Image (tube, rainbow, N blue to C red; front, top):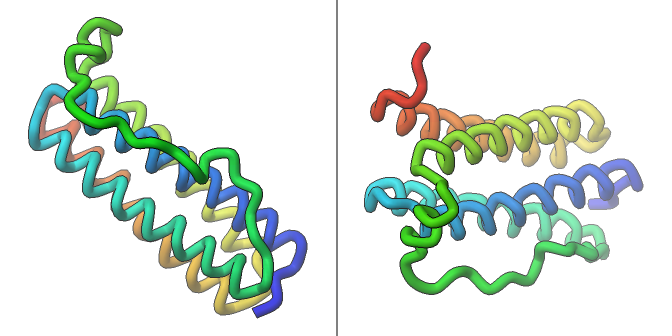
Length: 151
């Protein structure tokens, strides 16, 4: 599939967002106090990696590669919950930050969907956007179940 310059830029922008999400989820999994929350962050990181792989596939399928500042990263090894305590981060703050991040990422995909000319690209981006909204819902439910998000 041939990508327009606009589509390439949109895909690269979303790829940057995916890599940032992966890094944050991995770091927050290491920093979280609650073991269930650690697992939620780990699971969402893995799903974000699938999105990054899809976007990279879209670029490589068009004979393009991405210059990405977040592409290489050494994930944290071990438990860093004491670091988050020392820095004053709570699990509620980690969840809130990731919910805000997911809202931003979903919005970015919305723009990419609306500005893509190719139907297949649009469908792939819509699918990822739907999953990003599901990630936000997962985070919202975690917050709500702990009394950290009132509606």
